[in-house]
Length: 198
Image 1 (cartoon, helix red, strand yellow):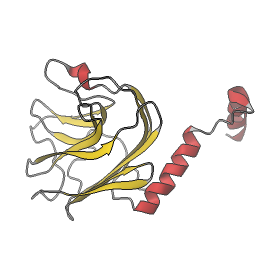
Image 2 (cartoon, rainbow, N blue to C red):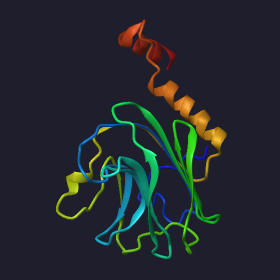
Image 3 (cartoon, one colour):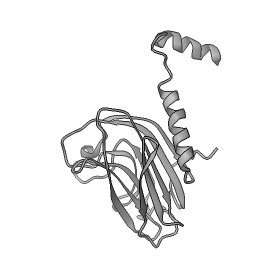
């Protein structure tokens, strides 16, 4: 099992990781950066990482901070599909200086990381970690501006880079799990089956 247990030290000093989620963004007609997940380090602006989209371009985007205090922000060029479920996957491999962005199981971009650091940072401002799902913490006077509008489901984090095949497989498994209710038999009957199995 490579899934990372949740803690305040999530992402600290890691060299590789993968983030995946099923999401349904709803367009806000704004120019902010709605976040799927964000780790904020105190009053100093550091994202370790931030994954979401740039509303000004309607493109998926991300940002990371290395142990050399390098902030790397990147718009992927991959357009956001609004009001429908999409499967997003983001991998980071700092030793090999590469990140990949996937949409619906297909790699859409491979990006060469312009970093000198060897790993993600850990509390670069000397403060405790703050991990937020569906928002950016500490955004000046408008903290709610970057809140996610829509659905985030099956958010998963690994402490290694998943392969293309693993991302596709995980997408199918996650889809089966969060869309597991059979429309014909209905929710009440499905819940009864789940309780019976356990």
